[in-house]
Length: 193
Image 1: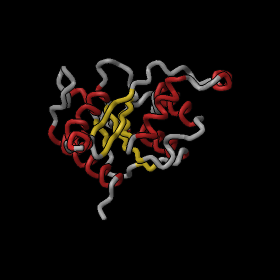
Image 2 (image 1 turned 60 degrees about the vertical axis):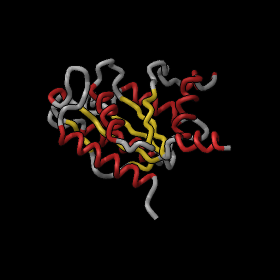
Image 3 (image 1 turned 45 degrees about the vertical axis):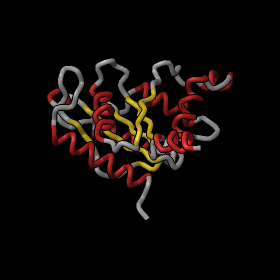
Image 4 (image 1 turned 90 degrees about the horizontal axis):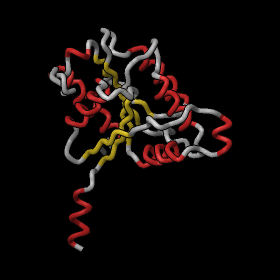
């Protein structure tokens, strides 16, 4: 009995999953997710999900059966208490891979974003820090009835100057913004009585 209690005590109180809109190995958005993980309280976990193998959405493919990788992604998002999305901006909008994943997930019978808390952030080389992508992503998630965190918003502009060559966040104001966003997100997920 004591062993069971001890194991339960180690379980995180809040389990989050992360999606990175960039598949690049040195992605600054993946680095931003790692920085968000670093500011989370001890009883909160954030696991970044990989979706590189997701095929391009095709209704013919869907008719043959939803790919196992999409089903697994849907299960992971449904099981999580919330989703954190960090993404660059491609051509003023959502990167194709991330949008493709969302399109697949939206076709699942028990659509995983419905009523799911979601926090958005983005890092970019330019000064706007993915503002246009986040606007587009909010519209898409609104259509899927996700509960998107309104504030604080995180736009990491001129991101290359805020992370070192290994992807570690070196900019203290950005770290504070991430800490504030994660605190607000956790309050949305587990509001105080």
